[in-house]
Every structure is written in structure tokens, then in C-alpha cells.
Length: 371
Image 1 (cartoon, rainbow, N blue to C red):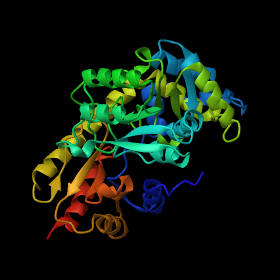
Image 2: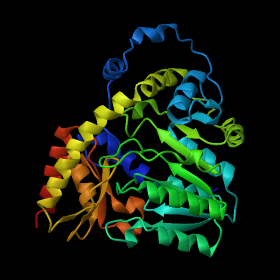
Image 3: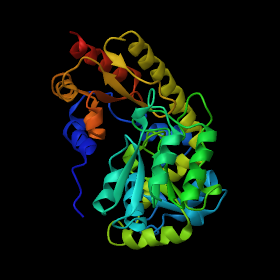
């Protein structure tokens, strides 16, 4: 495999730790250890009895049970704990696709959702959201793609990163029907699934389609990116095959990280509600800012998640604006080219951080948008 440069991660590697204001990331504000203790109702002293022992290949049984109670009605055999959802993506692509397979991926998308499959020798076809009005989801376009050739896999993430658009429940049902008719694996990236604003969260598809699998992470809706923990829900046989590959790489997730993740899952409703309230306020601030700048800014109001794909109109070099913003104003903003050349006039603008850094970051961006 020859993997291309991960453009988003390269930009983050260059600037993420060198700025004061982050309006580029796609997760909510970070919780502190103390805040997690308070909201989840536990004491750090509980860690003192935890032995530095190996965890289990599919994840510690306590965390798997907590995730199963939240997502699968208690069936922990369908749950694997991973190093963020990025490890889950890697393991799935290594397990399920082969050279020559046809893979349909929503576009734009997190690069790892498609380029691992391409490096495996798959044929990539893009379900382009930008062809509609305001990144509208067009199910007929997906049907056209499936009709060309039966895909091995259909990969989606809704609410969508980076645009924030989402599906209705009826559209999700249609997506499952299209996948089933094609006999394709449906890969449902649920990284932002618990962070919606005007509609109910979409359910995971596993109860309605057996050839489906889902990813999740504690980075996006929980504010726990630093524990680098995620999960994958899939048929038990597939999880076993994924564990065979993991034997060559990571073996298991640290039980110390699983300790915090389990307590977060058991108190997920409280954590997510707190973070959603915060993000919703920031979302209104962002939309008001955009409305006041119709000649410079175009965006579709995000239905979920904490990012928007914003077009900067009249800016000849958006990437250069993002570079200057980082290097001269110590503010992180992600150039749209990290999601493909078609988005060079856009930026991913994240509004999940603190109110202060969003306000400061937008003010700094304004300085570079002035004619």
C-alpha cells in the first residue's frame, strides 16, 4: 500500500499546537479531568486500584458492556473498542475490501474514509453533496451511482463532516434500502451522530440491515479527544477478523483510557446535553456572523456536528488566508483543499470550542476578509 499524504492531519500537525484560537477543529470544547469527574460522578481515587494489566483484544468487558447498553440493547458481542474511530476505519478497510472492489463514499469526506480503500486498489466513486443546493443530500444521485456497478461498500457520515448537513429518517431508510438491494456493506460513521440541533438523532442501522457497521468516537460530541478512544459496532465474525489484523498493530486499548471512557458512556446523556447546549449557542453566533457578511461568506446552517464548510467569496487564495491566520494571528482554520481540490474556495470552520476562542477567531478572520 502507498498511502497519500493525509492533508487534514498534515495541516493539523503543522498548526494545531501552535495557535491560541481554534476555529478549525470538528469537536466540541475539551473537558478537563475534573469536569468529567463532576459530571460523571466519580473520584480519581478509583483509579488507584486499577492494575497496569493488558486489556482484552476487543476491548475491556466493562466498557464493551457500557457501549452495548447504549447502542445494541446489551449485545456486547457486536462491540469493539478502538483507538478513536480512525483505527476502526483502518481495520474495516483492511478487512472488508480487496483490489478491484467498487466503493462509494460521500463527498466531501474525511480522507481516511476513502483513501485507505483507494490504496488497497479499490475503485472510488464519489457521492457528491456539492452538486445540490447547499450540499443537499440527493438520494437519486446515489441510486444512479449504485446502478452503474454493484458496490462492495457505501461509506457515509451523517451528520456530515465537514458540512454539518444530515439525513431525515426517511432518507436513512432509503439509504439502507439502496445498500441492501446492492448487497453492499453500509459503513455508517456516527462520529457526530449524537450532536444534532433541530431533529432527533438518527438510529444506527444495524437493527435494520445485517451488512452494516458503525463507528463512534469520544472526540466529537463528548469533548474527550485526549483519551483517543472509539468504538465499532459490527457482526461478531467481522470483529474477530478485525482483531486478527490488530494483532499486528495495537493489540488493545489501554485500560486506563477505558476507565474514563466507560464512565463517560454511562453518563453520556448528561455530557452530550451539556455539550450540545454549548454548541447550539456557538452555532447561533456563527450564523449571525455569516448573515452580516453576505458578500464574503456563504454557508449552509449545520444540522448537526460542530463544523460548517464555508465558502469565502472573492478570496483568490483561501489556503493562503488560512496559513496567514495561523502564522500571523495564531488562529486555526482548515483550508477546504484538505477535503479535495473542488473545495479550494471553502474552509472548514469549527464552532465547538469555547465562546471566547470562536469570537476571537472570527474577529481575526474578519481582518483578512476586508477588501
